[in-house]
Image 1 (cartoon, rainbow, N blue to C red):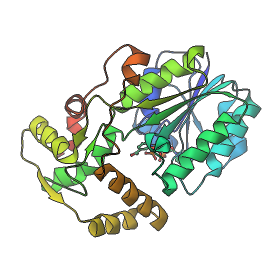
Image 2: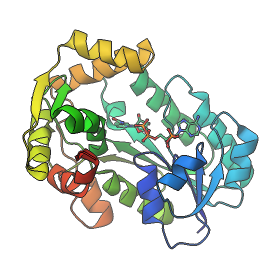
Image 3: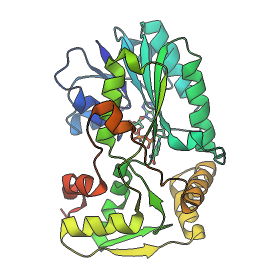
Length: 284
Ligand SMILES: NC(=O)c1ccc[n+]([C@@H]2O[C@H](COP(=O)([O-])OP(=O)(O)OC[C@H]3O[C@@H](n4cnc5c(N)ncnc54)[C@H](OP(=O)(O)O)[C@@H]3O)[C@@H](O)[C@H]2O)c1
């Protein structure tokens, strides 16, 4: 099976690339080849921006199965472009990362609507498909790495709110099964980690692994929103706030058994992920 991996420099895409190491004909589709080189990703690297359909067609040429991840809710056409290029290139099966909030009828923010529409595009594309609705990836904790390294502090909204966050390596393991196995065609899977865990508890795990204390500072909604507005367009910042409000109401705590059912092994907990990524949080 010749497989192409879009978003191979992203949180899940890089783990899909690593999980496919050793298989022949794996194509990694990235917009930044230098970043792919710095990450030491295994596989043939092809440059293509999701805005450039001819480049995507060239990058996907010869692939039979495709891992799809897009990252910009203000660019819904990116999924259309990838699917058009995939069809032109002869791809038969696509495995797409989406979000568990898609299934939550109370979730009506920009990011949830974008993921819903992207799923519909895939289901209507004529390709065989599998959708992987992911809960918050544990790798989001890397967003605290700089303040942990520099100040020994994590500042966040909703420190007590629990999320059954998932190790990207487990999402990647399910993706690899779905890329290879016809039995996963037409299936939509919700992927979570094994336990609901709060931000404060994640910070405590990291402090234990790093063997030094980390202070937690709770942000108000106004402070968190202002920080997001500095990094993202306002509509995206509003969606992040709405997601945090749903999390506070318990919407992200449910644990699903899908990782174990598909891969045959239990998903990693946050302690495992933290131990394996400790170096990213250590002062250099
Ligand atoms: N992050 C979360 O908390 C979370 C939670 C649940 C579900 N999800 C879902 O997971 C999916 C991805 O989320 P994310 O943004 O967090 O993923 P991500 O790990 O940042 O991956 C996105 C990938 O797409 C690539 N990319 C973005 N724009 C591109 C473009 N114009 N051309 C080529 N490549 C491009 C990025 O490349 P670069 O590496 O060059 O940036 C990156 O490799 C979304 O459907 C999201 O809703 C995310």
